[in-house]
Each structure stands twice: as C-alpha cells, then as structure tokens.
Amino acid sequence: MPRANPNSIEIDGLTFHYRVDGPEGAPWLVFSNSLMTDLSLWDDQAAAFAESFRILRYDQRGHGRTGIPAEDCTMERLAADLIGLMDALGIARAHLVGISMGAATCLGAALAQPRRVTSLVMADGQAATPTGGAQAWEERIALARTQGMAGLADPTIARWFQPASVETNGEGVRRVAGMIVATPLDGFLRAVRALQRFDFRPGLPALACPALMLAGAADGALPKTLAGLAEAVPDGRFVEIPDAGHLPNIEQPGAFNAALATFLKRGAA
Figure (cartoon, rainbow, N blue to C red):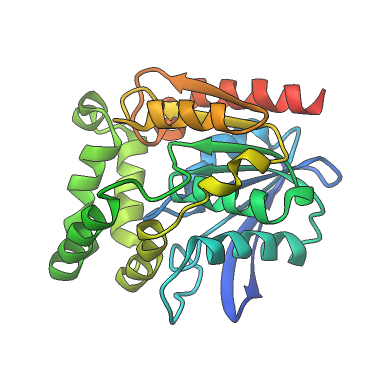
C-alpha cells in the first residue's frame, strides 16, 4: 500500500484531521465516516483500493482528531465541510462514499456541487430524518449526558452488528466500540443534531451522478429504504450485503469491497 500522508487543515475555523493514501494522479475516492467513528472506520477499504485510487479519509467535525464546533451541526454544514476539504486539497472531482451520517453528508455534497461528484455511494444511510428519529436520538443524547460515551457503546454495538458478530467479539467490533468510547461527548452532542433535522429528498430527482445504495441485510428497515432511494434517483442501483448490519464495511468487508469495486469499474467505463 502506498505511503500514507496524515495531516490537518483548517476549514470554517475548525481544524480537520485527514489522511491521503494512494498514487498521485489516480482518480479521487473520498470516504466519509458515521457518527461516533473516525477515519479508521475505512481501513479495510483504504487497503483494498489504494492501488487504483487516490483516497481521502477524514474525521467529521467533533470526531476523531478534528475539532469540536461551537455550534450544533446541520447536514448542510457537514456536506460543506466535505466540499471544503476537496477545495483545500485541490480535488476537482471525486467518487464519494459515505456510511450512515457520512452517507447523508455525501448526498448533501452531491446535491450542492453536482459537477464535483463523479459517483455517489450511500451505505446504510438515509436522505432524511425518519419518522420518530429525532426522539430516538433524544433518548441517546440523554444516555450520553448521564453515562458518557461509554454508556452508548454497548447499546450502539447491539444495534449496529448482528448478535453472532458481537458474541465472537471480532477485531472489527472491538475497533468500533473503541471509536465510540473515544468520541468526545461534546462532539457527539454537536453532530447528532444534524441527524435529527435534515431532508434531502426534494433534490433526489435531480441527482446528476450514478448512485449506489448499499445496505446490510440485517440493518432493520434500511434495506427497504435504500432500495427506494435507488429508484428515486435518475441513475441508481441497490445492493444488499448478506450477513451484515449497520456497518457492512466492517462486518463483511469482502462483500462490501466487491460491490464497491463493481460500481466504480462501471463508473470508470
């Protein structure tokens, strides 16, 4: 794997931590992480694709080694962060891949700056806050405030992964649990507000790039939701990852990477 280039850069008055892998001159592939994780969420994908792509990963605001904003986040702000990183690093166009909160972030960027996005991959995310979603997050916010991020780790792992994966306590599950606990409480509280109040659905019919909607088969209602999103955009397709929950890139990296590779090859052609 080509030599990595960890670095940081200031955008909108906030210091963002990012990492670039892969050969100079290759097409750009940008990954955006979920709530309560950092850029290492994409380690398996960086290893798999860094021979053919110039890869950008970054910590979303309030997460990892990126600064904590003074105000609550909006999904539009998170999308603007991604575009701001592309601007700062001289990335004219890129394939965008996001999971959960990162999926909505990438969708927002693709709708706001369509000429900058070669293709879009949304994994286990949504185009709008679901019915009842805002209240569900309030309950998790209350838990985090009373018990800290450690109090969110076990219930989040139980939601995100299949029971068999949790029982075997695989390396991937342990890594994600560590990311949750390491997330700054204030960073979580700022970022979660974006998930409570966003709606990109009006822009879906105008999405200008090919889009792949991916979902872990065991991720509740999301396979049905993402299949519907694939039908709602002009050039969309849906792939379900068997034996996976909310983070199929961690639980089934081989199947996730294969689906992503097939989509990227089609886009290159």
